Length: 347
Ligand code: 1CP
Image (cartoon, rainbow, N blue to C red; front, side):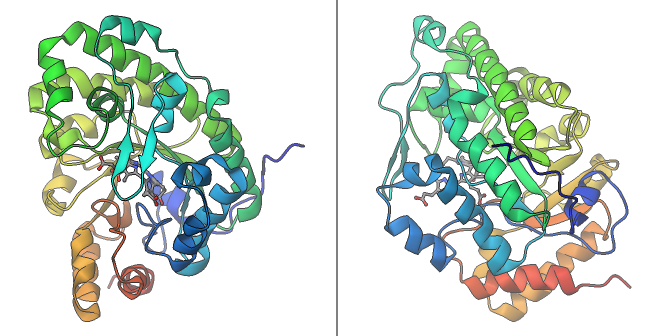
């Protein structure tokens, strides 16, 4: 059965803003919008064996991808998956430990370990590819669908470290200790990521976002040597759809990120909006309200969202938070953020 949908989009604000085209209002979505902030996600999640069952069952991944579209009426959907599917497809499986996060029973230590990894094929992550096809069909053109992957450095960090970390000191240390091994691993991750993103696009993803969640812990020199060249390869390889690069925390790398062959640059709350616009004048910027701002009273959430919108100026902007929404954020605050963006008119 051919599921690929060519239905024209009813709401293409997000895609038009991504391409730098003029929009009637600023589009809005949230990183991690499909997840624990939604009671319907928690209910479904609690009925399953674990996180992986959700990611690896296309019908379920599709269902939770659609939940925030129905509940929050955001302007884009993001496919429910995880950045850690890539290491697994390369031969390094992960476990998702309840309440603790990801864990890799085996990590990369030697060049032999790197050589034993394969370049992933889109088919190795067939469940997400199928989930995208199904979601495109179910969306029926309501809003665009975002595909995604982790940036090579961030994926490298998990493969060396074996899980989350406050410092990722083993992974950073590896860059200093063995640059040759590091480059070989980063190259293999990059090739796998390009294949995977192209598979997502072929399946129907309208834009792809590259998450470099741990960009900000590298020094500018390390970022220039071990992170940017690989993101550049990904951007240069993808010309089918717009690409968003989100280098979280890497305020020092904004001039270089602004030069990448991508359409949208993610901005976190550490980055001053007007300064970022000056550094990156030609691209669409996405962000950047502090997710913790959503713990404030609703009137404050509204004011802060309006200030953010005003500072971005209304065009070449996709409203979002500066990072993923925290699971214990009140749903009313999330709705207030979304509705404030949708109701705002620039005078
Ligand atoms: O059981 C659960 O509900 C676990 C929580 C969870 C969720 C909802 C994890 C575990 N992953 C996800 C989904 C997910 N992961 C999405 C879904 C789509 C959406 O945005 O709605 C996305 C885009 C990701 C991407 C992801 N996973 C990133 C990059 C973005 C970011 O937030 O920085 C990272 C770093 C991960 C790794 C990961 N997966 C899960 C956790 C708890 C973590 C972080 C681990 C750590 O602390 O290092």
